[in-house]
Length: 204
Image 1 (cartoon, rainbow, N blue to C red):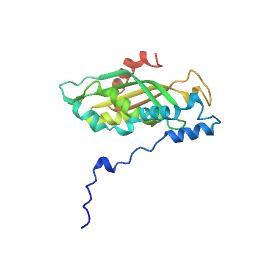
Image 2 (image 1 turned 45 degrees about the vertical axis):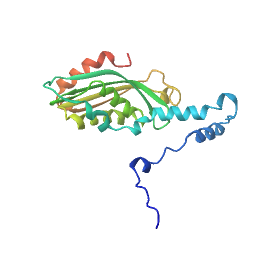
Image 3 (image 1 turned 45 degrees about the horizontal axis):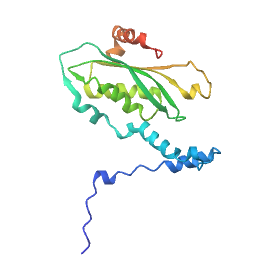
Image 4 (image 1 turned 30 degrees about the horizontal axis):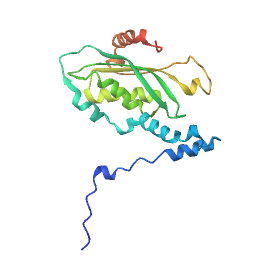
């Protein structure tokens, strides 16, 4: 009688991450470097470790991050978390962009734990990104989980793909916004939000 096969668990079915160190070693050689010289011997492993950290958002999800931190409250004024540090990587050149995010929402019976908002920003930022999509993803995640009366997100960032290469403009700051609900429909609400974060804009 054939041996019974062990049931496959979800963890076992998930493919292990492909090793990156060998690819980094080949990249170094392709750049004309000697991967065997002393200063580069451990570089492939270091780069792999750094990339795993910088893209750990792929292994995280909104449900797990926010589900234990949703609270019923009798509060319907604006909640703002500003000056959230953002570090991400441009998906076009895999160079960093960095800056600040300002997130606001108007509760509709539910609020999310304040510390969860920066964690949410980090989750989406720690992926290969474009700033425009990052801005929308943060707003959509808050909108879908607590159904606020409105949500607004502003991100200001400097992109090394513009500073170090390409146009090489050292003082360029990209500002993106996503306004939903009352922030889009009511100018007064939008202007209140922007006025409260304006002194903090331009990475000040």
